Length: 368
Ligand code: FNR
Image 1 (cartoon, rainbow, N blue to C red):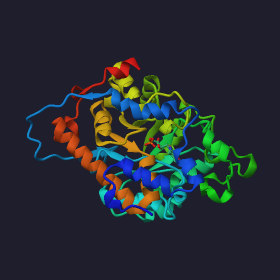
Image 2 (image 1 turned 90 degrees about the vertical axis):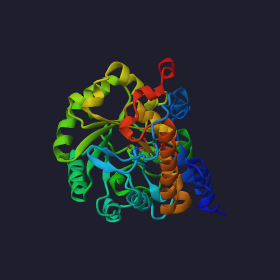
Image 3 (image 1 turned 180 degrees about the horizontal axis):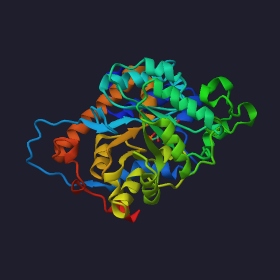
Image 4 (image 1 turned 135 degrees about the horizontal axis):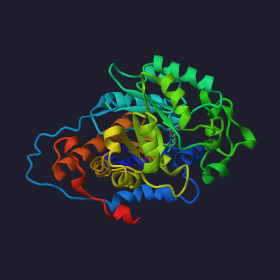
């Protein structure tokens, strides 16, 4: 039996229910991490390395969580990160995510590997709602160009190009499970390997993408995307952050793909720290998004203090939709919103601009 939603008082409660509702294929796909889960575990533990330096007596009776992400207003400094195959968790799939994001005025980044069509997802938004589109590039660039035109027409507002997956990470639980049916896979993935030859869902979902991409390809991708802004997702070093800026990216998205790609890659908090140290000017040039392991309002606030504009969550919303559909995702957003507000008050920040590096001691991130 599913416990009433009202008994869930944090994201972990919802996660527990979500996991208990999933069949084994969905559970394995959603929970998968690469190899020894080093990066996955690091994502969770990195926040523990950052301590707050709260400022007091600042009249926090009126606070606002409003912000803007790539020029689009958001009621909250967090968003829904792109994740494939929401229908594995709930028959309405990505529509649950779009509806809940619309209800709360937050950004939802729709995956190329969505199980609902992009038309269905765009069709379930409310006026003024912001969707971004996460792009994987097909080996056939003409297909990708027409996909970009298609999502532009549908009203997607920015393109989030994922660049940390030139090969699928080795997700062993997924690989052991095998059994990939063509019917599991979304439209964009139709050329993928299925049946006995597939190495799990992760492999099938990425097998059709172009691993020959270089920084030069950003030129045609930016041209095709215009006037949509382009964000590069998966940046993990300051060197690549600088290259992204010099190649005209509007934003960079620090991420290790939820610990599903290169194991032993850094957490986004570590990369944020590295950027502050070696390329502090980057924060004026590009907007910085982050994700990976953020589960508490305080986790979100730590990244904001270190210079992120907003923080994405992946799995928590997938578990929430699996447990309770749209209402579950909506509740997850509310719980996190409450924690962000409480955290801001206790930290002495009345708005997101007041979340500054001086409010954290992140020196332990340097030792890791
Ligand atoms: C993902 N992620 C992902 N990223 C992306 O760019 N395109 C995609 O299609 C997917 N698909 C996907 C499926 C599932 C089930 C998961 C868990 C993740 C990565 C995702 O955008 C994000 O980086 C991580 O999920 C963030 O980590 P947490 O919040 O899940 O810990």
